[in-house]
Length: 209
Image (cartoon, rainbow, N blue to C red; front, side, top):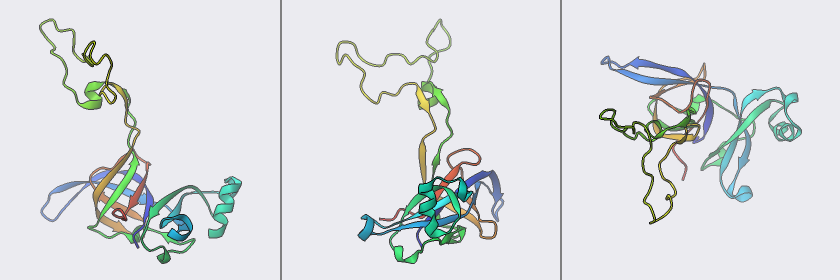
């Protein structure tokens, strides 16, 4: 079943292979994920499943969410997300999705929100080089000229300047799974993933065409 789930970032560590080479890894723990809606080409124009995650007391939800979740049982969830699929008939309402849908060695797409770094200058945001630090230079980390004078008489859109850095949606493709624990609902993936500790990440199979 080519679907996906939502998991929290637990943290990073390292593991060693048989030859003693260390690999940085990220540990992800998936909570309870349930299929809350099945979309098909006939009814919605495309094939997808909606997955509910983030457990919450049912009575704490607003009426629209309660009504939406009653068809999958009186269990509350805070958030919902979609996964494109090719065969919606393989799923049913209320079905629990866990890390068992993934296997060791396969690659997945990981989507999350990167760490926000606030307002950043050119050097930090775009990796610009600084000005000279000696010989009376007064231009160390200043942006410098941002355009010509009378022609064009304006700054072109998209000019790389200081501004908001981070806190953006980032998707990593071809992230390799190194370990799957179905009992604890844990995935261990190679390398780093977006966000800080406890960030909710969307883990999905390669993009469905």
